Every structure is written in C-alpha cells, then in structure tokens.
Length: 186
Image 1 (cartoon, rainbow, N blue to C red):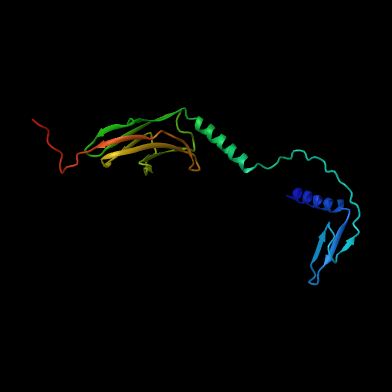
Image 2 (image 1 turned 90 degrees about the vertical axis):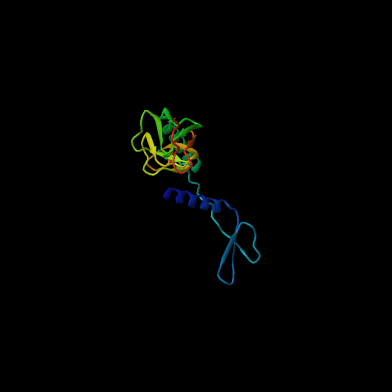
C-alpha cells in the first residue's frame, strides 16, 4: 500500500513538474484553482523543473489477482475437485421407472467412486428439495406421495458449495388410492 501511495505521489509531482506553465487564481472565498491554461484574473507561477527519478524494478513483486483471475482459478480448482470422483450416479431407481409401493416406501442407491473425500458430504434431493438427515449412499424414504417425482444427489464441499451432481432421475410411485388395498382374487 505504501508503495502504491509513493508511486501515485511521484506521478502527480512529475506531471506538475513537467508543466512549463502553471496558473494560479485565488477566489474571494479563499479557494484556490490551478491550471495549465491561462485563468482570467489568475497569475503565472514560477515552477522549477523537477528531477526525474527512475525507480528500480521491485523484485519478488507480484501484481494482485483480478476478480476474473480469482474466479478462473476457483473454477479450475472446483473442476479438479469434481474430477476426483470418477463415478457418481444413482443406481436405483432407474430413470422413468415405475415403482409400486402401497405404503409409499422408496429405497434409492448411489454409486460413488473412489468414495467421499474428507471434508465433503452427500446430499439427496427429492423433487428439488434437500432430504433432511439423508447423507449416505442409500436413501430410504417412507410414505412418499403417489405420482411422478425427481431424485438427485449432490456432493458438497466443506463450505457447502456443490462439487458434483448426479443427473436428475425421474420415477413414478404407484400407490393404491382407495381406502384399503383390495384383496387378491382367489
């Protein structure tokens, strides 16, 4: 920061010193105006020529990263983190599978290789909403409403940012809609 202030001060003083003519006008309220062009009612100032100082190139100086560079670096790190998982998919239910369960029970299974990285965690999502308390490779749900649903799993890093997602799987839960289940025919 000090280097930046010094550099800025030096640039400003050099630009003033390099001017051949500087005009100054003092207003009745006490404010002062300086210009390189003649000012009505102003006077020409005697400004000595300045000495040009050439600063040595700093060694070990690294320019600050721009926002775009930081985002690109973070994106690359996220891609590398995601690439650590060679297999991440929902094994069951299969996409567009019809599941008959009059009780509304659903068991879902994930394949994850090489295994969860330390600091990461799994999150299941049913119909786009996180399933509370579900963080393992097997998900068991009870009393799921009949109809069409979506299921997805995500890997989150220690900061809660999504590292990798499975493709969304759509399944259809078939439940008996009447009062009590019909008895089988003899």
